[in-house]
Amino acid sequence: MAPASSQFDAAIIGGGVIGCTIAWRLSQAGMRVVVIERGEIGQEASWAAGGMLAPLAEANRADAFLDLVIRSCAMYGDFARELREMTGIDIAYRTEGTLYLALSDADEEELEHRWQWQCEAGLNIKKLNADDVRNLEPAVTPTLRWALRFPDDHQVDNRQLMVAVAAAAKKASATFLLHTEAHDIVSSNSQVSAITTSQGTVQADTVIFAAGCWSDSLTINGTRVKNDFLVEPVRGQMIALEMPEPRMQHVIYSSNGYLVPRHGGYVIAGSTTEKVGYDKRVTASGIASIIDHAIEIAPNLAAQSVRETWAGLRPKTKDEWPILGTDPGIKGLIYATGHYRNGILLTPLTGQAISELVTRGESTVNLTPFNVARFDQDLRRSA
Ligand SMILES: Cc1cc2nc3c(=O)[nH]c(=O)nc-3n(C[C@H](O)[C@H](O)[C@H](O)COP(=O)(O)OP(=O)(O)OC[C@H]3O[C@@H](n4cnc5c(N)ncnc54)[C@H](O)[C@@H]3O)c2cc1C
Image 1 (tube, protein in one colour):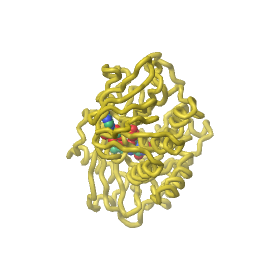
Image 2 (image 1 turned 90 degrees about the vertical axis):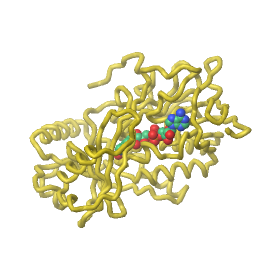
Image 3 (image 1 turned 30 degrees about the vertical axis):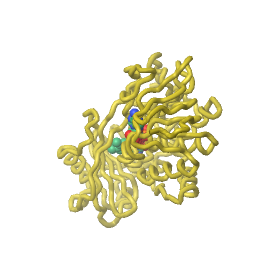
Image 4 (image 1 turned 45 degrees about the vertical axis):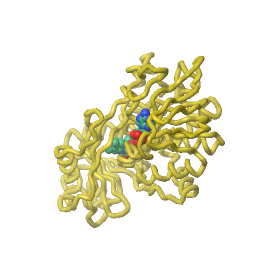
């Protein structure tokens, strides 16, 4: 059952990295906060991720989204320090940077394009010849032609991050209702008032929708969330391999996959991008393709043993940008969902922006391009 005094300033639906970070920030600001989580804390996408903080390696153009991810990435050093001071947990923030390998004609064309527009935009990107790359990472394939280096694209251990933000929220006095499924967001006179759940009703002046890819499990005043707002699941399978010596230091991309070296002597290889609904199975073909691509990057991985395999569901919106900000029709209803491939990267900024919105009514981050209303207005993007 929901606690007897279940009246809160803010109720957050979803105990992933996004929901827990917002809970932490709002509790720090002195609000009475509850996180409603239908399972255990942080066992979905936030646990399954690769932990890459890669605003530039994956960017195809300069736009509002690029500004957002660069800004969040720049917050990570302080964010990691604050979490360590608050909880004693080290989230393994690593700043070696990211390499992107050109292995084929098509890769060369793609990376040349990325190099040119990112240089013109004044972004921090370097071009390395094959010898330079092998000096940095001796395990890289001899078929390498050249590579891009993104010195400011980093990584964290997302599972440690998840544990840390949940611990920080608890320490700041947030309440957690676990094994409690949120069903309906209730408003009266266009103002949010409560959430009905599997364990009773929770009263709250503000409701934050941070349910990852499960938007269609909820209703608002008894009506399913409209189709435009649907956040769909996109499965990503992953594999952890023992890491050979000499140990890799950088996150390494190819056009087919990536390797993320972790403290503790293993490397994560990813991933698949599959629209298979809420199916979180690890499949033979998924793992086979990830292993092929991992060995294409670093042939000495072929002899390594498999430590773990898993899969998770990325929350994807229609245009692949997150939904951040207030509902246009219901006061007190705020969205923080649809982070797709970049939810770990966007965690510090989402926590800050949403807590500012709740506590001051506005954010220092321009959230207009990410408002849910964009789906109604068919806003054009800069190309
Ligand atoms: C394989 C893979 C690799 C990835 N790699 C990276 C990466 O390298 N870098 C990066 O930045 N991002 C990465 N991501 C993306 C990132 O993991 C997500 O964007 C991020 O974790 C989303 O966080 P979230 O809190 O919104 O969602 P989730 O972690 O999915 O949490 C949502 C929570 O809401 C709960 N919930 C849902 N519905 C209800 C309900 N009705 N009532 C109560 N609770 C509910 C769920 O149980 C869940 O715990 C990756 C994702 C995957 C799957």
